[in-house]
Image 1 (tube, rainbow, N blue to C red):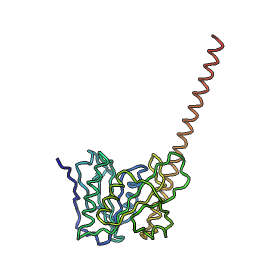
Image 2 (tube, helix red, strand yellow):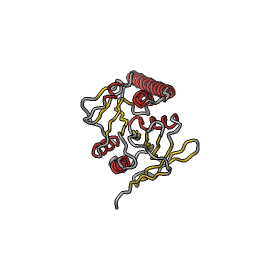
Image 3 (cartoon, rainbow, N blue to C red):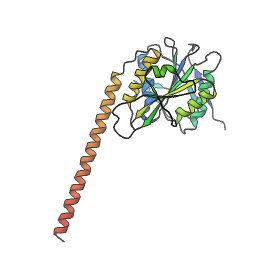
Image 4 (cartoon, helix red, strand yellow):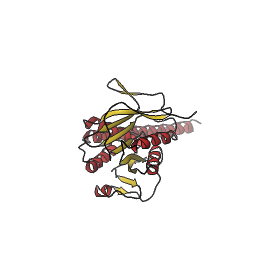
Length: 254
């Protein structure tokens, strides 16, 4: 049986031509959901206009302040001409994103929409301590000069994997300009990385998003991780010490 994917529009707000679409997906570091929710909180007219329905969305839902939300939502801001697709739950398989990406790109290329570009956010897993979140981009052949003007470095070579890759591939096939903004992330949510990306979005799209809270959250997460690491190291040292003492004791009384 064919898997159904469709966009259900709930609002009469028209997406203006040449809008930018931020595709915010839940992958390593949770950059997408962190960035998406921060923009929703701070852009006053970024309102939900619909949601994406799919057989691949698991039986999960999300809620904020007790209000239930569809797990894959679509927003639009007339002020900035920005659309935002926010998925907050992992789909049942990575291949499921291909059909959803296709639906998004079909909607984006429709005569009454005509999305100009799609932007995704990709995390590169770094298992060490991230001292500074450098920001990189990967784009199509028409390299966006505005990215380099904002001091975003290009990655010379690499592979983008996961749901972000399906979005970029579909966008390229649909002849929509697409690019990925990339930074290091930890295996945990990485709000500091999201903050650095948002600072670049502020420059590129003339936004005014405050990132202080995200930076503070990142510091708190990092401190907690360091504290846990120290406790684990102390426990390991204690176990080693006790093991050595036990060996000496047993040697004396053999």
